[in-house]
Length: 510
Image (cartoon, rainbow, N blue to C red):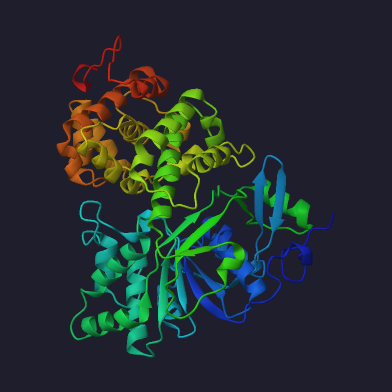
């Protein structure tokens, strides 16, 4: 087989989802990672295949130039490898028209968003990328990055700073309407993004502040959205699969599960691609879909990752194959998350849950526990507090929500002398140094957990007032340390907390 670089000239026509070169760049996407390339870019390619238009995507990478450089070398193409135990399907979206690396050229990002040809800005920068204070839910004005962006107008580095500065430039020049579409796992992600952008603009001096905010009222929309697709990290084996299917060399093939979903509010100020041709759903109320995704899928996914990693599992399928992990996942999903969610009428709950466990069991995909468990300090802030407070308000201690927090802490900030294993050690988290210091300095496990809620910057401090919840998390941390995650999950399943023969000792006696 002759290997050629992936390009519009060399790729087989049958492999292209999108055979037409976009008629212009109408979308700027912030966050040129695997998820965007396997999700929004695919929907956009399918939309333009049916209804051509100026919907090419300028992909903005935050810091690393690796993907942007590779895309440039490959005529802005890459392959999506859909993986299931039954085999693989390879496609080439072809919806991008350029790339920028924000770290290297932040001013270009502002001008790209401000360009009158840009009609939509889409965002996948993860929950951490919104620079939100976990205590207030507002823009984190204590963040050094936010402070810098507030002081330096032309070269913003944060996502919110880039959008706010670009909207100010847009308002002061041509004033063409635009839509800002968050595609991250934030509850009410459109409203949250709008609030954060308005808070940033609210720091401007008058009259600029009032002019921009007034223009935003009339010309900028922030639809809520929900996205869903499991997209693991890339590796050479996916590049080899692409080569086998296409006969050309792709250095940045993106793996993904076959399942994909995108739900949005129909609130676009300057038009949009015909994303419905790719299967996107438009609705007046995205919140039920958001809660279903963030809690039933993402919340349960986190518990599977942390318990699995602590039990030595490298992947999610390997984890959920452990009976105690599957049982814990089913219990938290049905008993603790589901009662806090109003499932959309169009969704059959039992079918949805069966589908989730089928997706998590996709052994061909091999989604790593270290990837799913990374950035838990931001992810769990979206998944734990509100459901926990609902249960606590009814007088119930949510055992598996407590176990999730305990397993997370055991992975990211293990108590002195406890080894969580290589998969937990491989998880990345901006809060790891801070939490590890708390673990090292606390006189007892309970004191450590309480300090996480009071001073850790992860969860609203009101949870610290629920001493029974804090104590139960500390119990589970101790059980994990002394007896392992399976025993902790078994204790969480007990109808009434009863530690029986397990003797818990405080950190002071270790």
